[in-house]
Length: 137
Ligand code: TYD
Image (tube, rainbow, N blue to C red):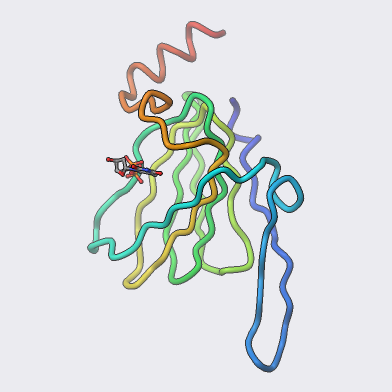
């Protein structure tokens, strides 16, 4: 997968004096069926999360609160996306190496995933990730 297949997706925003509301639906606002959701919170200052790729799993990540950076790497090119609003997120196709960093205090990362949790879908070794890419090209 190439990095330019990752994209920022703007979500619907229902502006309301009572408080704003945003939402997303699988296969409508994001390009896959949602199979699983998880969230990352209480990240101590300076910590990183991620540091892996998935063979099959696709994800959509929103900063529901606070801010953090998503660093993507397709083995050829690196790109950093800063998430800091709850009305947009980033779609990350499978096959892209990523990590998350620069979490602000009280940040909350919400992730929708296309597959069940499956440890064997992870590629956690960067040199293995690169050699998988070489084998495919
Ligand atoms: P991991 O995906 O390695 O965290 P990150 O990439 O965000 O740093 O997950 C951390 C731990 O949580 C790992 O032991 C697996 C477990 N886990 C589940 O059991 N189910 C899930 O859906 C997720 C995302 C993680």
